[in-house]
Length: 86
Image (cartoon, rainbow, N blue to C red; front, side):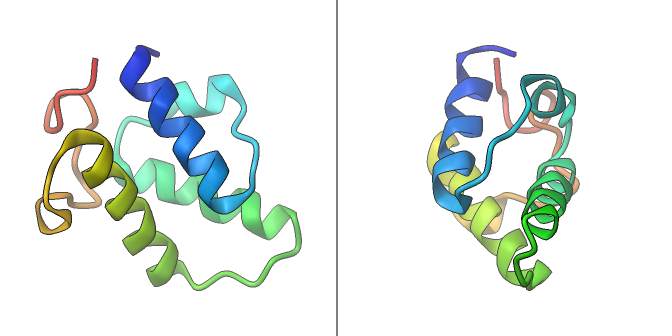
């Protein structure tokens, strides 16, 4: 995982107060993968989860990290191929 991925993982960890295992974070290829991991981690902590809110917030974080408008970030976007993550 390159610097973009590390920064994204740190931002997600801070936002949702979770810890992402490095291997799990590196395995996230799409925005949807990342949403799934966040939802899973929150549920494992026993937190109530509204998936659509998590999806939107993750899309906002991704958009901010890559300098995009949130409308440009789709769940099916691949971090490397579609968003240019290094």
